[in-house]
Length: 338
Image (cartoon, rainbow, N blue to C red; front, top):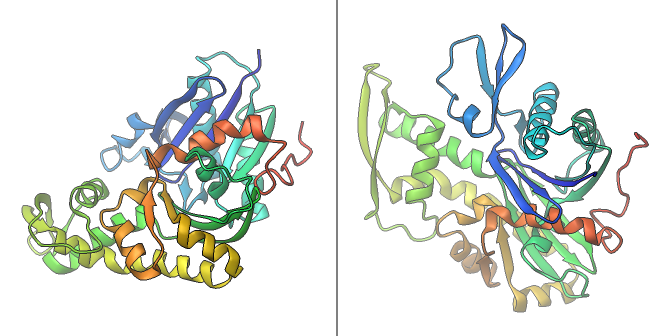
């Protein structure tokens, strides 16, 4: 029996759904590869644990960068491995719905489609992230009301206004979770001359981030290498440090929201003032972000329930809605491969 698999191929995480079962897998988009044996050693959580800890002949890499494939072979190996896990090793040829950022180019679309086909998919559909995020958040997008969604993932942030099943205006910016982590690493390096890893930066972001009104009262201890002495060192940082690192990045997302609103028909802008702006994706959980957007844009802003899984739930629902969707499925990208 052929199965329908939905894949939210994120820069930071890959979430897989199976029709009728919902989300069956949610793991980091990381693959560990053994150069000597020319074989994949681990994918997902197991590979993530290896980042920064492997001998030189094993590389642990994130094959997706800024929401698109940066390493084709590794992505194919990763998708193949995950589909295999989901199918319990049974070789079926599933129909696959894949999620892509709204600004993806034809070349990038083709790379994603080919990666899924080489991993054993029978047919590949593409759906755009903002559409999937809204469906997954439970929003009825078929009405002629304007709905604004800001989907902040690991590699890209998609800002879109959707009405009548289609995207009216959208912008995609390569400013998201991974850039936030890199900004924290940079700030700690410049301010305290201590080098920390990306996992430490991510933990600090999750525990301390407040991009609206930090007080300096939230603190945590981080460990890294002192760049002047070359020795390990502990350091206490506060939410003010994280604010300093992330404020400009958060403002870049706010700027994209303003640009989308500027080029949107006034009737729809009126809808958004009353219905608000919906935040989805892992980056939506950045402390203080909804308040910052409300303060500057003037429209209410709120986070979806369980924002990380919104896109995946939307992808799962997309199979039953493929006839109604315009934008994500309007030219279902089948590319003639069968």
